[in-house]
Length: 296
Image 1 (cartoon, rainbow, N blue to C red):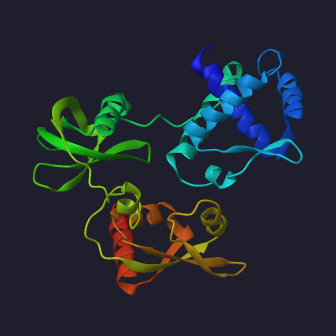
Image 2 (image 1 turned 90 degrees about the vertical axis):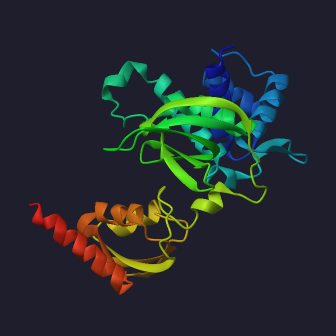
C-alpha cells in the first residue's frame, strides 16, 4: 500500500473520532465501509490497532477505549489545537488528502505559492537529527555571497519562507532565510546541542523570525472595523489578551519584543489597527506611515 493511502486512513480515523466523539469498533467499521475508505472493504481489527500505534507515534494523538462501553475516543484532543509539529503535520496531511481527492476541480482551487527553500529541508533536517554541522552558501539581497559553517539548531516557517536558526563560528545565533541559501553541504563535524535550549522558548518573545535586542514591551492596540474578530480567531502572538470590547472596537494587549516583523504585521492591517501604548511605539508607527505617504 502506498504511503499516501496509509496517511489517508490515519487522517480518516482521527477526523471520524473527532466528529463522532466515541464509537465502538463496529460503528467505526460501518462508517469505514460507507465512506469507501478501502473501496468498501472492512477495516480489520489488527489494522486498526496498528493504525492507532502509528497515529500516536506520528501525531501524538492517543486513541483510548472505554472499558465499560467499548467505545474508542481521542483522550488528548488538545493536541489538535496546539502549535506543535504534530498538529502542523496533521493539518498538512489533511489538506494533502483533500487536494488529492479534488484533482477533478483543481482549476477551481486557488492556492498560495509553496514555501521557498524547501529543496534544502532534507539535508538540514538530517543535520539537525544527527547533530552535524553544515557548510552553507548564503547571499543576502544586494550583498556579496559568502560561505559559512554553522551548527543547525532549528527550522522555522514564516510567511511562506523557511528560516534556519543556527550558531555560527563566532558563537552568535543567526537566522538564515533558505530562499537566500545557495548551497548546503553536510560536514563530518558534530556539535552538541545545549540540553536546556528550546527553539519555542527562543522565539516566544517575538513575532516572526527577527530576534534582535528590542526590549520587552507591553503593547496595547485598538482593533477597528473587522479586526476584532480577526484577532480573536487568529491571534498574532501567544501573549495576546483582549482588554475591552465595544460595538465599534476592541483593545488587545501583547507582551512582546516589537521588532520590525511585528510592526510590519500591524501595518499590514492599515486602518484596522491602531497602536495606543506605549507612546513611543505609537509615534514610531505614525512616522512610518508619514514616510510611506511621501511615496504617494
